[in-house]
Length: 446
Image 1 (tube, rainbow, N blue to C red):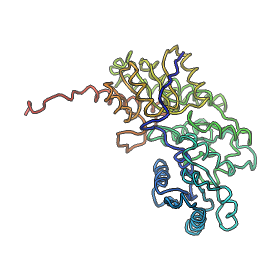
Image 2 (image 1 turned 45 degrees about the vertical axis):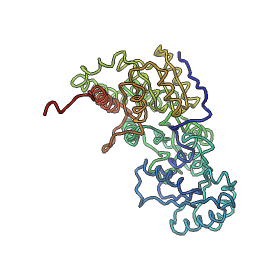
Image 3 (image 1 turned 180 degrees about the vertical axis):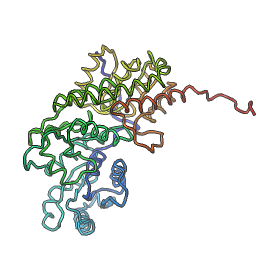
Image 4 (image 1 turned 180 degrees about the horizontal axis):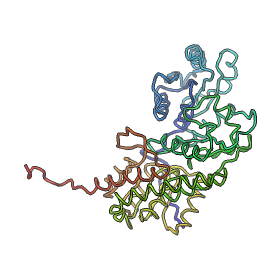
């Protein structure tokens, strides 16, 4: 069972962890190749779109973005003419088949009719105009991802027969793993080994043609517990594509990975291939731990730990930390709070027999306040939580997630068997670093 935390005096917050709806929308659109974006906003919001392209590792030569660069006078007087001019210019210079016209908080304040303007201008331009209302007043980045996904739904078609043994992968970027692309590669590799093809990734490095073919997939797999449920259900209702594996944890840790692969195999009748993956994966982990980490793992035993992460990894870490590293997850702080994620976490807590405190949709104030009240020895989170832990006198902080202090040159998956070892390596190094003395007077050895 768990106690859900409540927080007083939360009408204001400082250092919010979650971005605005625009961040989520941009994170989806940036995953589509050969489209352009017109953002109706002041210049700062254009930086949010640029950051989304950064997360997809798309360089500036491949970005086709334009901003109306609203000023105070535009907010007072309105700026429809400015947006119309920008759309015409983007259509002429970018020459893409699709232009996403994105409204922001400023457009909401003005009261711009983005949808009406796009409809009235469609006959004037070559590109298909897709209006997206993404003002940050509407919600956080996870809500914004749902808005972005909904804007893609009209592209998806049901032309031709269903492709057997095929899936769509949804929302791989809704993840705090700084190299989430490696998680996507692990899933794709595992599917291929079982004879399952990927019809479309929605959306990362995806073409409009791939989106159109997504309606022929035989199943959808959501790679997030934080966003994408509403979109997957719409696809299920419109195209009859079932959302599978949505009621189990993502492949984080040894037991969760094995369960994920077996559930996948059961749905597609690929048990033999799955068992080969499981056998080789488990043997690889055990062999590495036997040779390099058996003397390390006992130090984690009975360490009381707080988890501050998204639901995608935060829920999966509970079993990994408790059963596989013998730590005690006594505080769980999740950055989202979908109904589906809450059900999965509640079942996990009950099955493991844990008593823990939990908070959903946490921001900066709530994370810090919860850590102040908690009696924990370590925190699993990002560099941001590491700074908090240091300030609060919590000695050990494991810096796994975005934002991270690490320079990352090689992509490392957190999903799967190797992913577990990648996380353990980071944790082991952070443990050693935390216990080094800052008080040694090195000059005495000169």
